[in-house]
Image (tube, rainbow, N blue to C red):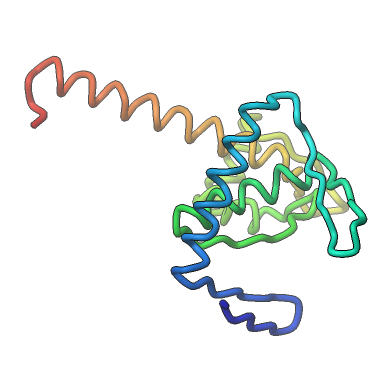
Length: 155
């Protein structure tokens, strides 16, 4: 079994290769059963005493995503994000400098508001912008691959 290290409010859970294999097998079984019942939105958990507890759909979705990543051998970090972000934190999330972030705010690309003299951004706006940028990058990469194929430059 993996080892858990807890420091302050952070925990690191190491996962063994056998746990990755178990996650793969479990995920495959869940996927197989889920296809049979496509309307299933929540998970029913059976306890040893015979009782059952229904896991809310949002939580079962989160657990499903973690299980999927673990089954692929990925490292998973779970953290909460506040509703409002400082400009420094938003810039780190987006992978840009703070001045670049402030230009995006000034140009109206990213909505922001003032809390006294400080600029704050809603985390949902920051993550939506990041997703739009990622989609643009994927589209540009796909177009580049298409051009390579068209020109016969790919292997």
